[in-house]
Image (tube, rainbow, N blue to C red; front, side, top):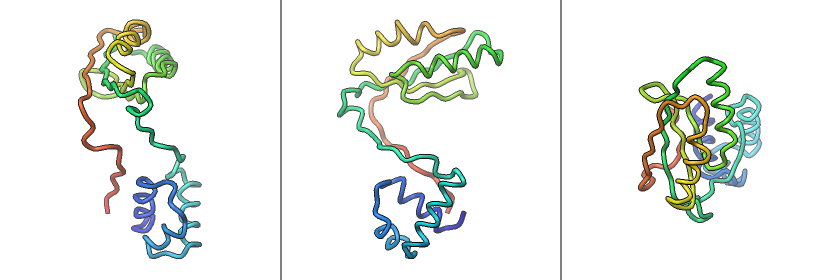
Length: 151
């Protein structure tokens, strides 16, 4: 991956719907070169998919929480069962296994505190093998998702 590939990726992260001709102008590459590079980035798995970034507040899911979970038992089988259960909770917008005192951090989006409490009571607290759950409410986003490529 060279500086042109990194530049193409940075532009696509900001605007995945950019016209190939505009991308070509912004990178000082020919249209065919940009197209070839994008295809290579896709085929090698560097670009894994394209998706829309949705304003959660605009669709009624503006209440955001980070949920830290520690497991009571952490065998491979139990970890797998726990992780499969996470996938079935629609309010979880991202989930990560982490190092540290907690084992997982989840990002949860709901309509309001009452909706979060219902998700907590009926779905999060019933997940298997939980030892401890801690919730931190998000006040505001400072840095949205961005791509960090050493240039």
